[in-house]
Image (cartoon, rainbow, N blue to C red; front, side, top):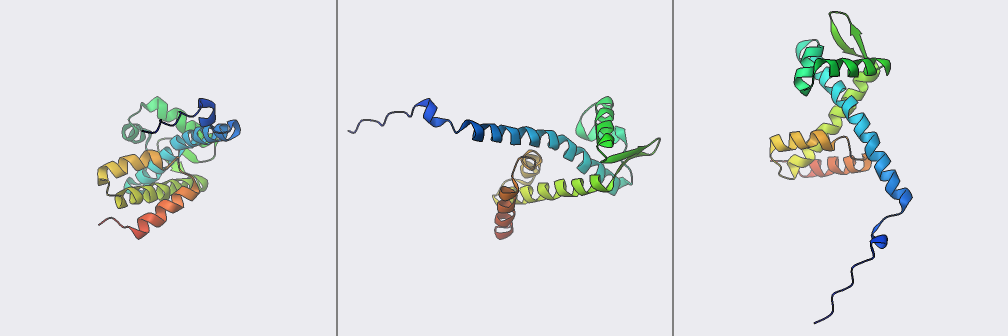
Length: 153
C-alpha cells in the first residue's frame, strides 16, 4: 500500500498576501454597497406598487426600526440617491433609480441562475438576495448565460 502523500505545508496553502487582501477589499466593498442597493431597490418597488415609499413601510419590509431607516435615508440623500419631502415620503433621484434598476437586474440574473440549477423558487429568491451583491460582472455574465441556456422548467 503506498504511503499517503504528506499534507502541504500551511504556508504553501496560502495565496499571495496582495491577492488575499484584494479579495477581502472586494468583499468589504460589496457589503457596503449591499445595504444601499437593498434600500434603493425597495424604495423603487414601493413607489412602483403604491405610488410612494414611506419610512414606516421601508422599516416594516426590512425588519428594522424607523430610526435606522431615517439614518440610512439621510446618508442616501447626502449621496444624491434619494430626496425626501416632508409628509410625502422618499423619492429616488435619477442616479438612485439607475442604481436600483442595476441591483434589480443583478438579483433577477442570480435568481434565474439558481432556478435553472433546480433550486426551489422561494429558496432561490432568498439566496439571490445575498449572492447578487457579491459576484463579479464576469461571474454574473456566466450566470446569465447559464440561466438563458438552461431555463427552469
